[in-house]
Amino acid sequence: MNALTVDLNSIISLSDEQYFQLCQANRDLRFERTTTGELIIMPPTGGETGNRNAAITAQLWIWNEQKKLGKVFDSSTGFRLPNSAFRSPDAAWIKLERWNTLTSSQKQKFIPLCPDFVIELLSPSDRTSVIRDKMLEYLANGTQLGWLIDRKSQQVEIYRANTEVEIIAPMALSGEAVLPGFILNLEPIW
Image 1 (cartoon, rainbow, N blue to C red):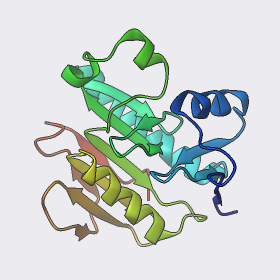
Image 2: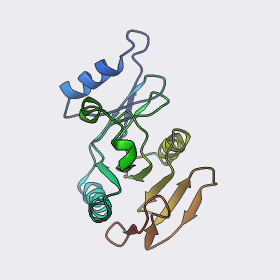
Image 3: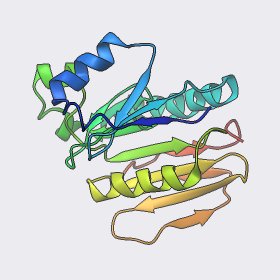
Image 4: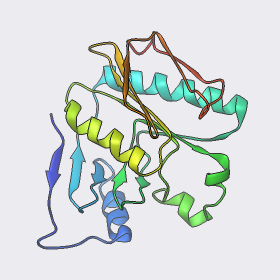
């Protein structure tokens, strides 16, 4: 099943608070919102994708628990990007200094920051072009490093600020200077 995009702009323009309340009232649905206000209703992942998303998030969380350099978020976390879009990457990380600038209220709702690092894992229902556009949107809004992982081809597209996209076929990925010492083992992901 593919994501469904709904344009409500002709009848209503949801405020950020109304969007948050819509998501809270429909917790069984996963929403994202584009910069133009279109709602994207995303289907839940299948078992294989969900398991691999968990493996990714677990590795990132364990690294962060040891380093204590930031905060790790799973695929159910919403981020309000500077361009006004609301996105939910499969895994994300924010530097602790940036997280600590948020109020308690901001930490309880959709995070009003673009993550420093994001991972998107292509699922069988994803359109690659749509996820690539999403990765570029993260970069345009402040992400420093992003990985688009394609299990089918066993390739990773690496997105870095101010650099061309690099496509590689690795068994592990380095978090580079953004996530010092982090290595994502791709064996359980493939």
